[in-house]
Image (cartoon, rainbow, N blue to C red):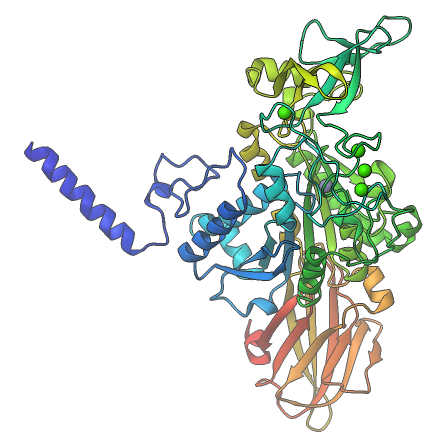
Amino acid sequence: MKKYLLYSLLSFSFWSVSAQKNDIAPQDLNGMRAIGSPANPKVPMSWDRYHDYAQITQFCKDLVKAYPNLVKMESIGKSYEKRDIWVLTISDFKTGKIEHKPGFYIDGGIHANELQGVEVSMYTAWYLAESFQSVTFINTLLKEKVFYIAVTISPDSRENFIHTPNNANTSRSGMRAFDNDGDGLVNEDKLDDLDGDGTIVMMRRKSKTGRWKVDPKYPSRMYQVRGDEKGEYEMLGYEGIDNDNDGLVNEDNTGTYDPNRDWAWNWQPNYVQNGALFYPGTLPETRAVKDFIVNHPNIAGAQSYHNYGGMFLRGPGAAEDDPLFTRQDIEVYDNIGKLGEKMIPGYNYFVLHKDLYTVYGGEIDFLCLTRGIFTFSNELMTSYKLFNQKNTGSRWDNDEFNEFDKYLLFGDGYVEWKTFNHPQFGEIEIGGAKKNYIRNHPGFMLQEDAHRNMAFTLYHAYQTPKLEIVEVKTEKLSGDLVAVTATIMNTRIIPTHSTHDVKNKIERPNYISLKGSTVVAGMTVQNEDLQLFTEQKYRPEQIEVPNIVGMGSVKVRWIVKGNPSNATIEVSSAKGGLIAEKVSEKLSK
Ligand SMILES: [Ca+2]
Ligand SMILES: [Ca+2]
Ligand SMILES: [Ca+2]
Ligand SMILES: [Ca+2]
Ligand SMILES: [Zn+2]
């Protein structure tokens, strides 16, 4: 008894001491911690499930409360139904001003039915904050960079998807009502949850002329007969009734437009680009994101999470924009994308228009071509993950999802077929995949894929420019004139400006300044050995450098009057951050 008492007293004092230095979680130091994950997070979360808007909002608030020196939360605007669109700003606020750090933008769930993009965004915010003390790489990353994480940018539709009967593709976009069939009525014929089980599945009817059959191995699976094989069923689409007696079923549903066709680059109207609205920026949600991006010129890299297919997509969305991606910029994408293929087995690095389809007015083109931001869009989840192998044929031609459902989900993926008396179709059967199966990850896979995709995105963020003053030299010239030569290197692979940016002067040039000295001349050193210089006659103390390429350097020289050792060299780059060092400190190194 005594022994136990002593033990508990000892452990009590251990806990209270640890609790005081409240930044390090005690379990992070012992064997309870599984490597790579916080063992004792201040904000406990389960990453094997999806979260609704109230839970997302609570999560953001909890993270800010637990880590006030690392996480800020703001609303960047309201959705159509007046929900706040939250952005979490994550950085080490004690190290430099955040607007002076290279920024990385992440968003999730522009397509609201693609639930896991939001979870990966939340997981990333959580992981960064919870690992700041225990993982050196994360610690340094948050000192050097700032993350802006818009956890969900179509919150209305996500709420609708989660809490009302839907299939895997509804609702995808937002809650603004449109007359989809041009009959003068809006939302007059939506999907109908015929059996009231909360999910919208398929309708089928026995038919002598039908071209569908039940797969004897997996009774939930229908397959299309080929050649002269006789069918048993006809398919009647998703659960629904012709509510307005116009001869069409489910023809005017909520959320059929596409917020990812509402962006101001190569925008095309709906008759060219299906899903587009009236003009680029019709939607309040995309306008809020655009304003945020434009007001944060430090954003150098971006990720927009989607599903499905296991892809790292880069732009452009349309073939005619291919020439805007130069070899140097493609090399950057290649470096990150090809590493991604290793980091996430089954995922492929693709060019959007070439390997997937053409997208006009898409978000990633807006980010990279109007703002010069190096952008990837990950299409989360792939059937490769089911059995760690590439499947054969299309999803409809193979039974992997059914096999996986049977052996790993124990039948949870599908609603079993049952008969129903339909007011228009008579006796039918309804059944099929639940809305969260196929496109969205099953729970036990969610955390792993969230982590892998986050790791890919953190590598991308790590490669945003990091500028360093690597060398400073002084040389006495005649009279009291001194030459000061500084070499600035970008020690990451993303340049301060994409070639498209430099060519079109999207962002201001980098400024390399000598402050606190009398500068009489300033120049860029083209070749020191051959003594080739380009003089900048106007404002020589602030040399303008259009770009500092990835893993590349620039050299500048000033001619000053008097001793420059008290002067300061400042490098100011919109996307590369701001650094400053005293000439004297550099010379002594
Ligand atoms: Ca209508
Ligand atoms: Ca109608
Ligand atoms: Ca139903
Ligand atoms: Ca109808
Ligand atoms: Zn999508």
